[in-house]
Amino acid sequence: MEAAIVTTEKQQQDAFLIRKIVFIDEQQVPPEEEIDQFEKEATHFVLYDGARPIGAGRFRSVDGVGKIERVCILKEYRGNGAGKLLMEKMIQYAQEVNFSKVKLNSQTHAIPFYEKLGFIVVSEEFMDAGIPHKTMELTF
Image 1 (spheres, rainbow, N blue to C red):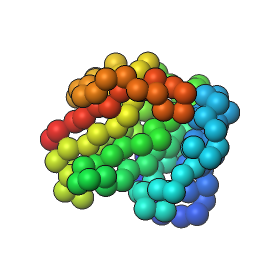
Image 2: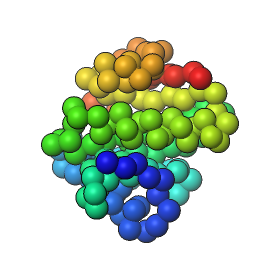
Image 3: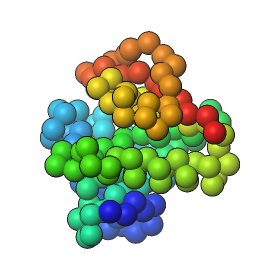
């Protein structure tokens, strides 16, 4: 498996495809909430198993803090290190572009995954696209 920063149109389409499968098809997030006005300003990431796209995420600067968003892995690849590999690439990128802290809004079921990467919960539970979330942060 290899995580890459999106630099081509094909990689961008691969990332959007994974987000559609996971968020829109699987989790029933409305398409207009999933693909939003921040796509052009974000740095996108895609995770491949050989030539097959299997994961995606994006990164933005929000109020001087790096924000990791839209992290998703195809169902059949969850639990085998794919998400960890994608997150490590995104965290490495944040450090390379000189952020000292990143945050994300985790679906509550995924909190233990992010805690293993060093993130801590910093908010109460809130709903986003009909799914319970909590904000988490990692300082480095």
